[in-house]
Length: 396
Ligand SMILES: [Zn+2]
Figure 1 (spheres, helix red, strand yellow):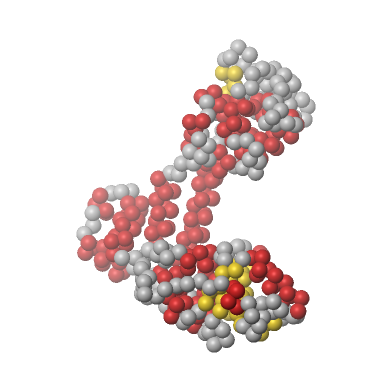
Figure 2: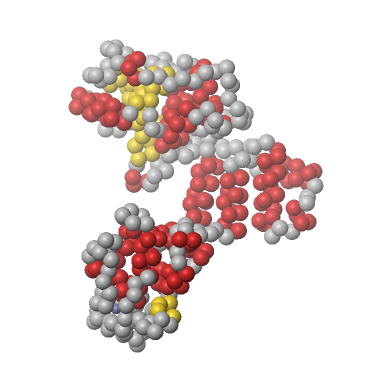
């Protein structure tokens, strides 16, 4: 139970996640790569020193024999992007990156590309498409061209947008102005000069070198432009989807999939470690995670394990046995049709011998719903610790 409350991951789970994160750094400098290989050896071989203390020469040989991690593109119909052979961790400080304001384009005849992202719900969140609209006149927009672009290796909105901006930088014969949501994660990454991502550094420098103008704009303004476009033009039913190979992030996609799978395993393990009483109150382990234990009394922790005080203040089992129909402590009879076996839940919902605290849980019969909403964070009227203190300090 303590493991659940502290949201503790096992050593194996932590190592697996570190291994997954490390696998994205296979192109990293030698020192970082050595750390990753050592960790992998510890994990695979149980930390046997004979494996960990391999000579540097043996490690080099092992690396030579490893398959290349550069993704290869087998499809024929992809628009080829640049390859990422050169890994950069620092940007060129002489290339000054600036964002532009939309007011500079607010005059007739000015052309701009507008980038938006759309999620294809049927295929899940990792399948988005970036939509590009070339238009003129912000006040009365007139559409000149449209495109749909998707990153061929990882079709989430972040990489779709990066791919789209790169493509527009390379091919800027129509205009060099790009309007984009100011809250888009790609804009945030480009703005952040401390970002060490090789992808972001290269894109930012390309933007400067090609004199591309990035114009972050709030969603309200973008929605207004889209609405005017929708009213004035009939949109083509099917736009050809262009798949763009830059950035190549096959490993990142695999890592995210594997990390998500491990997180599911962790949640399943933690849910299995919940006590019956905790499950009766809220089944999801993450609701119990990170409740500050120092703010819970000994009595609360004991009652969450499934024990309750009876009338004589003796700790007894708080779960009803199959043939038992009297809740310990208050001696209430279980009503016909009531499936609650937890005394704590009974005290919360149907006990006639206690009065629920009206300030906290106003309606006795909806108390369990309210309590679950508080534990899941949907209801923030009181803290989880205050609720648990109330639940476990009820005196008959
Ligand atoms: Zn009762």
